[in-house]
Image: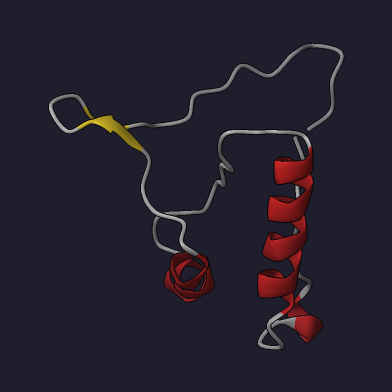
Length: 79
């Protein structure tokens, strides 16, 4: 799992697109079946390049709805 962020002064230069292509290339090399990404629901400007790249809400089955991420922070880990 990777956390990747484009810092503010470099945003708007299609860097996220380049990073996503590299992530996809790495995932294919490792024979991964998908790429997952976390994004804040209200972060509209960030969603646009992700949608253009082909990412979408994760839904296993329309009957059950969209997947949400849960977490439990571990005592000895800093996140």
